[in-house]
Length: 239
Image (cartoon, rainbow, N blue to C red):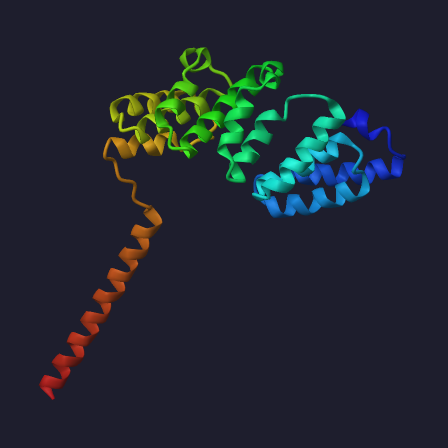
C-alpha cells in the first residue's frame, strides 16, 4: 500500500493514508464511519488499487454489496491478483445470487489463491449451497484436508464452526456437537460463538447477572413498599 501511495504527490499521499488508517481502525466497531472515510480516500485517489480495495471492504461491512463488488473488481483489474475472489463471490451471495458464487468457486482463479484464500472460498461456497437449500452439498464442500487437520491455523475455528452449523442444520446433532467442541478448542480469540452453541446443545442456559440484580432490586422495592402499607393499615385500625 505504501508503495502504491508513493505514486501520489506527498501531500495527497498523506491525506489518503490518514483516511485509510481510519478505515482500518473503525471498520469493525463503526462500519458506517469507516465507510465515510473510504469515500473521502476514493475521491482523492480512485486510481490507487489499495484505495479501491479499502473502499470495497468498507462497503461490504455496511452491506452495500453492489458497491463493494464494483470496488473489488476495480482493484482486481488494477493489480491482476485473485486474492479478492472469495470476497467478490460473497458479494454475489449478498446480492441474492448464490448460484453465481457457486460458479465462481469452480473458476480457475481459485487455484491462484493461497491456502487461506482457498479456505475462505470453501466457506463462501458452502454458504451459497445453504442459500440454495443444498445442505448435503454444503457439508461436502467443507470437508477438506484443512478441516481434518489437527494443526491450529487462523481459519481453523471458522471452518470447524461452519461445518458444525451445517451438520446441525441437516439434523445431525451428535456430529454437530463434536465439531462445535473442536471449534471451541481452536477459537483462542473468541472469533465465533462456538462455546455458546455448544452449551445450547448441552442444555445449558446462560443467565445475565445484571438482569438478576435488577430483578432483585425490584423485589426489594416491592417488599419495602408492602411493609409500609401494612404499617399504615395497622395505624388506621388502631385509630
